[in-house]
Structure formats: C-alpha cells, structure tokens
Image (cartoon, rainbow, N blue to C red; front, side):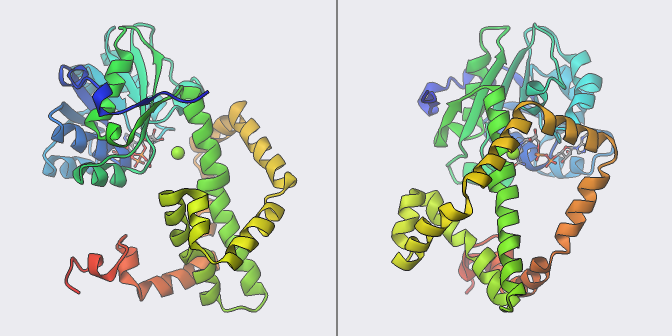
Length: 344
Ligand code: NAD
Ligand code: MG
C-alpha cells in the first residue's frame, strides 16, 4: 500500500502555534527541534534534568530552559527527545504526573510505544514526528530553507486533532519542505531498527571492516584498502542519494557496473537474506528490544566493550592518519574551499 504524503500546504500551523511545546532533551534531535520550533514562532521551552551540561548551551542559543517536570507542567505538547532507554523513567517521574487529558505526548521514534515500555493514559494524544536524518542535518537544512523528510504517526487520538498537531509540528521543524509520510509506530520502529541493523549501521560497518581486513591480510597496503573500502563509500552513497541505484550505475565505469551486477548478488545471497529475515523476526517479536533494554539497565558492559573494540580496529588507525592530511573531510565539508570558509 502506497503511503500518504503531506507537504507544506497540507499543514495548518495554527495547531502548533496555539499550543505550548516542551522539548525534553537537548541532544542531537532536541537542539534541532527546539531551535527550528523557536525560529518558526512556536512557544517552545526546553526541559532538562538538574545540572544538565546542555542548559547553558540552550540558553545561549536563545531558548527558555526549565526542569523536566516544570516544562511538562507548563506545556500542552511534550516531545520526548532523550535516549530511548531513558525515556520510560523520565516519563514516569516528570511527564505523566504533569500531563492532563487533552494534552499531547510526542516521540521521534516508535520504540517505547511499540514495545510498551511507555503506556500513556487514554485521554492523551500520542503521536510521532520522526525526522529521517540526524539532528544537525535537521537544523542545517531548516536554516537553509529546506528540510528533512519526516514520518508521522498517531497512536492515540483523544482530541480528534492528533494528526493535525503532528503535521503542524512537522511543518514547524521543516519536515513538510521535504515531505511527510504517514506511518504507524510499529512500522516506523520495526523498519528503523531493521534498517540500521542490516544496512545503515550494522551492515555497512561490518562489510567495510571485513573487506578492509581481507585486503590487508592479502598483503595490500592498509592505506589503499582504506581509500577503496571506506573513503570512496561516500562518493557512491552520494550518487545513490541523488540519483538512485540506477543513476549511480550510470556514473561508474562499465567495469565497475559489471562487477556490481554479477558479484553483488553472489555476496548478498540467499544465506545473507535468510539472516536478514532472522534479524527482522527478532525486531518484530521484541527479542532485540528486550535484549537492549536489559543490556542498558544492566550497566551496558557488553555494549561498551564492543564499542571499545570497534575503536581499536586497524581501519581506525589508518583512517585517522589519512584524514589528518585532509582536514576538510573531518570538518564535515566536501571541499577545501568550503572547509576554509572560502579562504582558499
Ligand atoms: P541524544 O543522545 O543525542 O540526546 C539525549 C539528550 O538527552 C542529551 O543531550 C541530554 O539533553 C538528555 N539526557 C541524556 N542523559 C540524560 C539523563 N540521564 N537524564 C535526562 N536527560 C538526559 O539523543 P537523540 O539521538 O537526539 O535521540 C532522541 C530521540 O530521537 C530518540 O527517541 C531517538 O530514537 C530519536 N531519533 C534520533 C535520531 C538521530 O539521528 N540521533 C534520528 C531520529 C530519531
Ligand atoms: Mg534509528
């Protein structure tokens, strides 16, 4: 079934302009939502825990900062932008006691609603506005007059206005510039976890490291392996992002294209697809969610050890050395000129 798309004309900004919004958290998503809402003229405040290191930053950037309970108490809409594993405790302590029937609880990811680690009362509207991009991009594209596509979903519509509010909120953070798609908490959550596990994060990092290891073990120079397996990824991904897979193939050599068409499917064969299906099943039946919640509550020992091991992979050492000679890359810029602010 094709998804319903919404653009700026479909949103009635009054649904968010008439309400007070609390953004809880000032991390990747939090800072971008809060600043975009403020610049759109929405009455927004940021709710942070006592002694939060982000408070000074948020104030410097012109935002009103309150405690999480006060921000929730004062607002009609609470947007939870804390790490997913912390949200249930924060919700119980600061949000639930401060929300009245007819108010709205919003999320940027379906995790806690989908796996029922947060169960809001019936009288509350429950919606999702999930930007399909990291916070710094949500902020930057907004400042530039564009936006990041957003998924919206309505889990509970107590007031009859839930969809309109989510759409107006998406509009105020810039989402309707790029397109807003209506989905469900389950669809967003399950596809998001699956995508980050098998393609965007897990698939990509594992395939890159494995290919690097194989080249280095075969006696090729680590620098050559790094450029081939990691550095060039961006060029290919940019083409796919701009023109799709077919457009990317148009730009590469026919030798590369023939290798792509004949070797790619051999690599990602029925066995790999069966493993992907198993990973999807673990997302759908809650196995992954319970494992991650337990890991998080238990002190994150395995998570931290795996992350530490990843930081010591040989690809990081050679990469660090090579990128040090290309400072424009680490500055997140695409050209020497851009990185030096047009000075070159
Ligand atoms: P983050 O880790 O960047 O930010 C978390 C913020 O929460 C911190 O900056 C701080 O303000 C606050 N915080 C941290 N520890 C806390 C504690 N112990 N108590 C209270 N507050 C604390 O989080 P994020 O990546 O912005 O994710 C927020 C939500 O947005 C999540 O639901 C996530 O799934 C979703 N999301 C993230 C992205 C992304 O690209 N990062 C994209 C789409 C959706
Ligand atoms: Mg994600």
